Length: 156
Image (tube, rainbow, N blue to C red; front, side, top):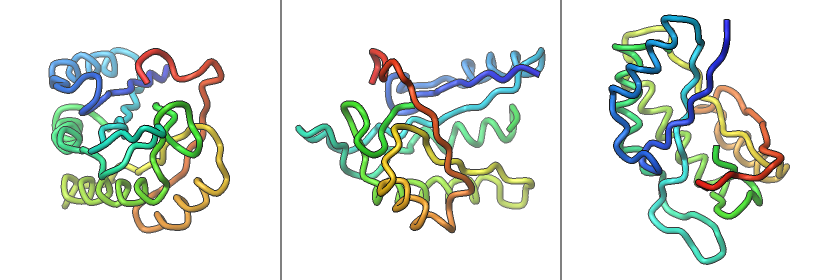
């Protein structure tokens, strides 16, 4: 089975992700692909001049997207550590992970199995990842790691 990773910029570049887009991805799943959706963690209240993003994650579209995948489907950015351009503090990601955990628990209440919550991957910064892992033990199922060796691309 082939794996297709789809990074949805929920609240970001594709502010109004339509369920038709997700339905199209579902068709790919039905044909041949295993699809993994990612939620964009960049939408914040304020982007600071030093490149840091502050404020809580804007997860407005995330819950409706998760609900859609439960009932109609099936189960990137390098923002961690020093990153490229914009970064988000580990303490803020801890809060965001807790918010996402609450959404998943609410949407999947009485339904099992519940999807796992995986952390972002990105440029490795040991203190940043340690803080995230240490403080997210009740809301994070696994920590991932990947890197874009050629940089973040033009949309970051």
